[in-house]
Amino acid sequence: MDWIDLVTLVLVAWTMLYFAYDIYHCVSEMLAMDQQEESSLDEGAARASEPLPPLILPCFPYEAEPGRASSETVLCAICLEELRQGELCSEVPVCQHVFHRDCLGMWTRSNGSCPLCRTKIVLGSYRYKAAFADDMV
Image (cartoon, rainbow, N blue to C red; front, top):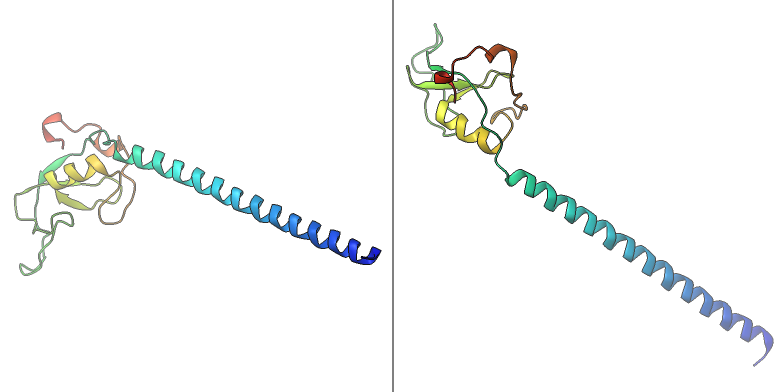
């Protein structure tokens, strides 16, 4: 075996070792990133499974808007049932969407956003600070 064959063999072996190390390094980094993502998802799921504190939202009897045709029904987007005249309803303070009082109460125990537009529900909105405890969800 002459000198050139030996140098070629060493270079090929070194190149193969370099690529093997590079592949190992990339795979180990990807696995570490996956583990970090999984742990952050687990933490987020644990936080999401904790119930939110009950929101204090005023309730009021539903009244159809004047001039609305009697054939036009307004549905609660949570239970998909019609809002009827005189039923107790609650309103999301920020976006002013209206739902059945009990439906919105259940929704806000597990979600912090409006069921329709996903606007974050802000606690202690200035418009509702004077509401009485009997009128709360």
